[in-house]
Image (spheres, rainbow, N blue to C red):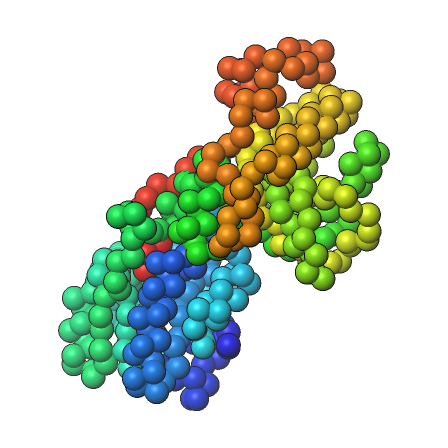
Length: 365
């Protein structure tokens, strides 16, 4: 699997291919179906399959912090694309120069002169070029003129609903990890390398492994019961906080994981974290005693969940289809000498990502 950053890095041997273009955020089952469709043509023509992606993603370029949160970092996206058949990933910088190209210029510079494409697979609603002037009809017309095939993607549905990245985001935000896994074809996960942080968890008897997150909108935010796979393949359960740790006052997002029944050094080790059930939103406590008390409640709730939850045979994880019960919330409990009602906790203290809109995203999201 080759990753090519920019058209200028394309070698002669990497040209002449079957190509598809899109964000491929999450590399869900709809994306996997597109890659299978492309593999069939690549085998027929005996050429490589190239996936064209953009960094940043176009909606991130235009909307900034208002863009939908990513399901996958570029590193994970590339790995998954290779897993499902891509032989090359061409990563184009989405900048003013690229966005200023007309539809015809994009075809000429990227598809013909750059990739020397032999067959192209895109959504029939694919728009490109300055002011989104380019469309499927233009691609088909130029393809007929220049001798390359153009076809639209096959719609992929689960239970009669189209699979899309925005639908997966909505399911994750609502705590429905079971159905999200059925759309992704795998359990949703976050991964990274453990770094040294303030080590405040140790001071209250709850050591944590901290994985920094990119300064982008978060797909998840709150406290979760999680399954964890360590670099050496060991599996553990635990509790994780995803977000800004408001009691500590962190300015950058962090994935903070406490493993049950584990004693060892995880610094500089990679780990993969699988959220299994949502416990609650992030809450700012006035002191560490109140935080510690709530962490103990979170741990108890997670232990009870893992003791009774049914493990999914496909993912080998006990994935919840909804947030856990009200006992997991900070409600009717004393938080630093202040009684927080259920209504107040849910409206003011709990931080939840807003669900992404279902705006069309190239190639099924």
